[in-house]
Structure formats: C-alpha cells, structure tokens
Image 1 (tube, helix red, strand yellow):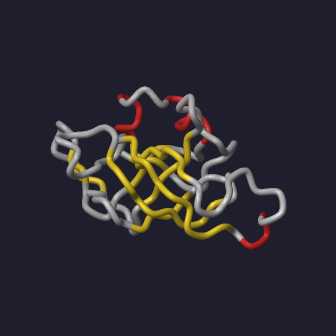
Image 2: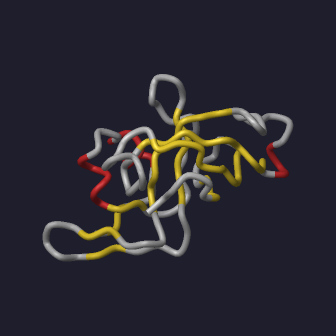
Image 3: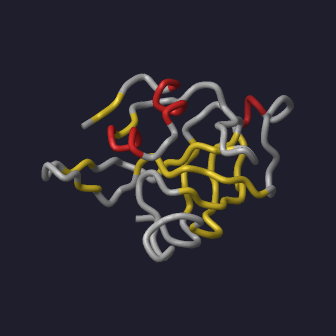
Amino acid sequence: MIQVSTLLTVIDNSGAKKAYCIKILTGYQKFYGLVGDVILVSIKKIRAKRKLNSKVKKGLLYRGIIVSTKVGTSMFSGEKTKFFENCIILLGKQRKPIGTRVVGFLPKNLRYTGFLRILSMSKGTIK
C-alpha cells in the first residue's frame, strides 16, 4: 500500500530514479494506493548517466501508475504477490508512459487496469 509521502522507485527508462508520492488520484477512498492506481509524484533523484538527455526534470510533478508494492496484493483465486520494493512507471499528461522500456517483471493484475501498453513493454508477468 502506498500512502502520501512514500518514496518510490521508477522502473522505466524515462531518466528518473526516485519519486515522492504527493497524492493518490484513483483508488479506494484515496487513502492508500494499490497496484494499478494512478498517483501524483515529484521527481527526487535522476539517473546519473541520463542527466543531460533525460525525459523528466528533477522537482517537477508527473503522474505515475503503481506497479509493485512491498505489501502483497491478493487475487480472487487467493494468490498473493509481494515485491521487494515499491515501484511506479511515469505517465504523461494523456496517461501514456513516458519511457519506452520497463525493467523487470510486472504483476498479472495490471491487465485489468486499462494500461495494456505497459504490459507489452515489460519482460513478462508474474501471477
């Protein structure tokens, strides 16, 4: 579960490394963000190799979709998926991903959120 003021890792190639959650835009009562929810983030750290030609700038606000959380999410079948860190993928103004590649695997329940483009950019899915 992601709350306001949570530090997140960005796992796409947009150029950002760490982001800070400012507001939960979609989700259950907007207290916590789960996998597939859209949040508003501020960029806190940029990757060192991509500083000159980065697609994002430090300190600016972007939207992001939550891709993985440390607290597990359970499916209807009873399966629970956990990850080692809280990760997001940055979105633009029209809710399209800024980056072109995703590093790592994504959970299968992102399929039901309407962001199928993100699933096609990743290496694979996890149950």
